[in-house]
Length: 79
Image 1 (cartoon, rainbow, N blue to C red):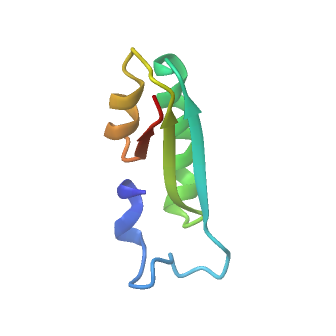
Image 2 (tube, rainbow, N blue to C red):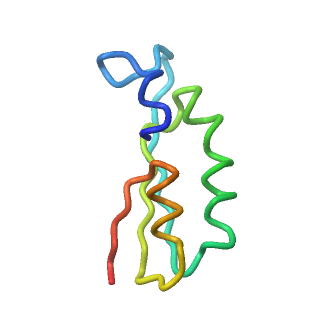
């Protein structure tokens, strides 16, 4: 995830032996909870557990996409 990319080595790993995961968050008008969910992932991203965060937006009319983008997640719009 972009916020933690600097902590990874050239192979994309954080230097730990554990595997990295991708986190996929479905969202639809989730501005009230999305920022808090993203914040909760930061420690795992810094430690190298999370490789990327993908927010899949189902056509939100609120600020969900903006929040996800500002947090550094990859955003996939499905509607």
